[in-house]
Length: 165
Image 1 (cartoon, rainbow, N blue to C red):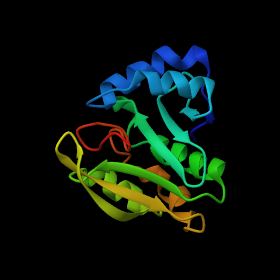
Image 2 (cartoon, rainbow, N blue to C red; image 1 turned 120 degrees about the vertical axis):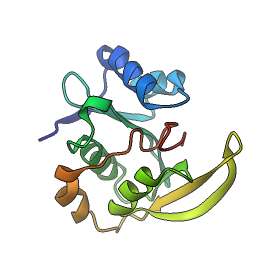
Image 3 (spheres, one colour; image 1 turned 30 degrees about the vertical axis):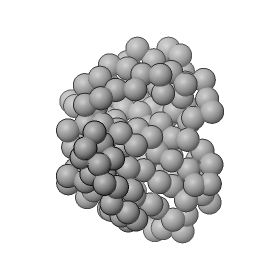
């Protein structure tokens, strides 16, 4: 079972390392801001093996979701996403990925997200997809499928399989 907790300053070095190996283009300043808030920074494990960075609001926005390469496929991505969904409560949750990020698309669709819009040239000339999850979306698939989690390399960040949110 994956333990999810709020990130602390002590996690920052590890989270920056996960960000570096998981995302094609990194945004360390966003991660620094997430540690101090208001963005919500959650981590999986102690020491962290993955993290989610979300901006609360209505709608809320999942800016990054990344799991270290050697810990992918173990349910950490699903657990982090479920925790973000729980924290944003009744707010709509949005994120973007690269349009060609097949693995990310499957992951988010399996967790109640739907493509709302194709974003032309969103990522340095490459198209993106805006995903939306309504507050009343069925979350039962999140828990039941976490064991077979195919969490994307960086579900919403800029990785080869997805993009900066």
